[in-house]
Image (cartoon, rainbow, N blue to C red; front, side, top):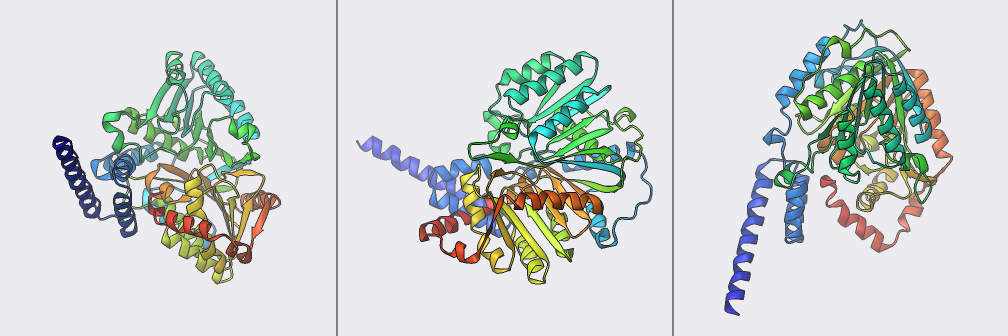
Length: 474
C-alpha cells in the first residue's frame, strides 16, 4: 500500500514539474499574450489532458525550422525569376497601397491578362477540373488538404493514373492529417502507377508533436502551366452530394492566363519543401497569353514567416473600404485587429455583411464563432446565417473592384498555423460576379437581429464565453 502511494506521489511530482516546465516554455516563446494565457489555462484547467493537447497542437515549431524560411524565400525568388517579366500594370487607385503591401511582404507580383471563372458548387467545379486535366499534355500538379478515396476521389485518381500512363508528369501533394481517412494504399497505388505522390509533413509518432499543428490547407491544381484552379473545395463526395442538413456550399475559381504562374510557384515551393526536389525549368513556366482583364496577386501564408501575409492583406483591404465589405466564411474567430477593423468599417458607414453557416461541421469552433457576433451586431454589421446546408465558402468582396477568395478561413488557425493561399483579384466585372454569388446566397439565409441574439439562453452564452477563452488556439 505504501509503495503504491509512493508511486502516485512520484507521478504527481513529475507531472507538476512537467506542467510547470511547459508553462515556462510557453511564456518564454514570447507569443501573443492572449495565446500564452490561453495555453496556461489549458494546462491548469485540464490536468494531463491539457499537457497532451499542448504537445499535439501547441508546440511552436517555427523556431525549429519546420520549413526553412531562408530556403522558402530563396525558392520564391528563383521561381519568380523563371517567369515571364510582367509589364507595368496599374491596379485601381484605391488598391495601390494593398498591392504594394502584398508585393513587399512576400514578393507577390501583380499579374495581368488573367481570366477568372467562378464555381459555387462541386458538380460544376469537378466537371471543369476533369475537362482540363483530360487535355493535359505536359504536366498536372495537384494539391489538396483533403483527398479521400470515395467516389469523386477514385474518379480523380483514375484520370491522374491514365494521364501518367500517357507520359504526362503528374505530381500530387496531399496533407497527411487532412487526408487521414483515405486508405494508405490509395496513395501507394497511385505511386505504383506512375503518379509522383508526396504527403505534406507526414505524421509519425516520434515527431507527431511538431507536425500536427502545421497543416497545408491549400487546394491548387496547375495544368501545363496554363490553367489553374484554387479555392476552398477539397476532393470528397460531400462537395457533390452535400451533407445531412443540405448542400455543401463552397467557392472555387479557374484561373487562365498569366496568373497561373503564381499558382505554379506556390505548388513548386511546397513540392520542394516536402520532396526536396527543386523544379523551376522553363517548361513549368510557359509564355502565357493575355486571357482576360483581371489583375491578380496570389498570396501565400504560413507559420514560417515573420508576417501573416493573408491576414495583413485582408486587414488592409477592410481598413481601406469605402462602400461595402461582404464576407463569407465557415468559421469566424477573428484576431483582435481584424475584429476592430470590421467594427470600424461598419461604424463609419460602410455596408458590412457577414455570412456564416447556421450549422457547422466543427462544434467547438462554431461555438467560439458565435461568441463574436454580439460585438459585430453592436457595430451595425449585418449578420446572415446560411440555412440551405453548410457554408464552407471563403469569399470576400470589397467595394467595386476587389475580390478575395482561396483557402483561408477567417480564423486564427488559417492566419497563423496553416499553409494557405488566397487570390486577390482587382477587376470590376469579377467583383460584380462575386456579389451576385453573395446575394444569391442571401436568398437562402436569415438575417440575424440583435434582439434575437439576446434571447439566447444563459447556458448558451456561458458556453460561448468559455469557448472563447481558447479562441487564440483555434
